Amino acid sequence: MSHRPLLVSGGWVLSVDPSIGDLRSGDVLIAGERIVEVAPRIEAPEAERIDARGMIVMPGFVDTHRHTWQTCVRHRYADIDPQTYFAEMLGAKGAAYRTEDVYVGTLLGAVSALDSGITTMLDWSHVQNSPEHSDAAIAALRDAGIRGVFAHGWPLVEGASWMFDSRRGHPQDIRRLRGEYFSSDDQLLTLAMAGRGPEMAQRDVWQSDLRLARELGIRSSIHMGAYARNSRVRAIAQMHECKALGEDLTFVHCCCCGDDEIAMMADAGVSASLGVHCELNAQGIGDIPLDRLLAVGIRPSLSGDTETKCSGDMFTQMRHAFAHYRSWMGGGHSRARNAPATVSMRDMIEFATIAGARANGLERKVGSLTPGKQADLILIRGDDLNLTPVSDAVGAVVLAAHAGNIDSVFVAGKAVKRHGRMVGLDVDALRRRAFASQAYVLGLPT
Ligand SMILES: [Zn+2]
Image (cartoon, rainbow, N blue to C red; front, top):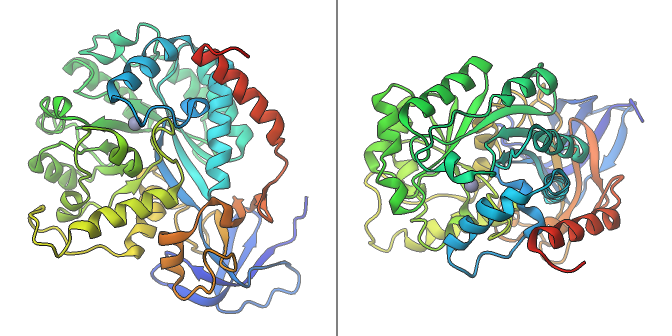
């Protein structure tokens, strides 16, 4: 492996760092894991030069919530009642998941996230049927080479007892994981809790879960206000009442949460994660609350959620969030009071990068091309037919780019995709394992 610095040279740089801005033609110098310099032109004769002319160079995307274990049953649940998804995936199918299914699903989900330019992903893993299932998910994230936040959830064996007014505290195995895999916070993989909160657990239970996460020094991510029935619990108001809200929390969806609850989130510094494409597809989940979040100053992150009913790539999330907002703005429809009259495509890029880094607790490390941060960046081929001639790089990324346009992906200075292909990945072998796992999970003949 080369230890020479890398010079990514001559690309259209979207740094997402306000002190650097965009460079119509710029260089990014990388040494080891880190970004050293971002400037219009950098002299570095000792560096290995990567020609980025004709490309858009930007930070890797940051996904803040994905049920990666479900990847082998992709695209199966968008056309049917959402209850079927819950009943099957969080019921009998999830309970029957083997460690192999968790491993292959998580690996395939993570490498395809990387292929589409997502360099950091929070794996919202609520299939902890045994300690070995957790080990398998963590191994998959490690083997994928992604910057992963492993969000440890609960088992789906006896799943109802964990999800409906639960009296069972979060699995204590999370303590072992903290010590065994995540004793350092300065590594590619970090730990979070995929928590249940007041919508799923009794008050003393969710309070002790939260205490456990805080004792372990990790963040918690909790689904909130998806579907009207959940919003009736007024979970955020309950947490507010118990003084449990804090900056170490990310709430997912928030579609049906009250305006007062969203204001409580803002006051406490809680982050939000919008699984935009999934929310649009999930019949009855509620309207995407982007206007209501922005009205109180919360700039949300974006997420691929579950590929069982959406596309997990970040281009899709940005494009749909932008279109959803634009579709009503200026039309006299009543939206949240104090909501911005418009959002911009640049807002979408920020939601998909720096806002995600914040929500994953990694703002100091990733989310922008800033000297000193980790070298997590992507190169998008602006010369491809669907993007050329690029006149506005932000517009090209948000409106039209897709995973197939991504030439290169670097995580911590290491190439995981080059010249449009994943590095060192046996795609055929992975596909075979994915089909075999799918056949087992769905009960199909092999
Ligand atoms: Zn989710």
